[in-house]
Image (tube, rainbow, N blue to C red):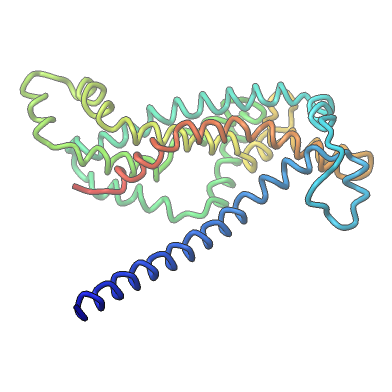
Length: 291
């Protein structure tokens, strides 16, 4: 009887301990979620504050009783934001499409083809990841300028059509597909391109979708390179437009209109991430797992 009582006490103590740990974990996660989501809340809040109300706040207020959508109208009237969104869409779609072709072919070559010095070339390729981005930007800027491709979509797109990290991620994913499938396809007379398109691409679709989405987000948020390579409004991206809105505040920074533009620009990416979040997680986990 005493043993049964002790067992019940131990079981109850374990349950209480587990509940306490869960409470602490969820409390910490809640705090972390608030910290992460607060900038988005502040962005939305600022976008519905009037210009005069925002500038009259000596102490920032965490709410507003008189929201306005005039900032969204000003964001499109101050600069041709619609045109910049269209330019960004062209830049994002074309860059992502070309990059997907380039990295797929490169990853297939490193994963399945056999040629002299393959491992040395791949190691040298990976070493490019150690080069600081600032040096790459300087080199690309000099190259594009010498080729007279400033203020062109080609100058915007070409430096971004490949990625060492994405090639490595996709190559590791291709390497997980059993060699027996490749040899069986070769026995049936299937060419390497057909094997790539009909076997590897369908199997590794989650990783390809993940890479595509991450590249879209990267291109959509691109700031440094468009600011360096374009000074013609016909080729401005949304990053240039936000900077113009920020500086057009009648002697002061028009932060509310800028935040309204940021909300408009951020919505497509947030929707895209929410729609494909499961595929992103699946693709990343598969690309990082061997065997």
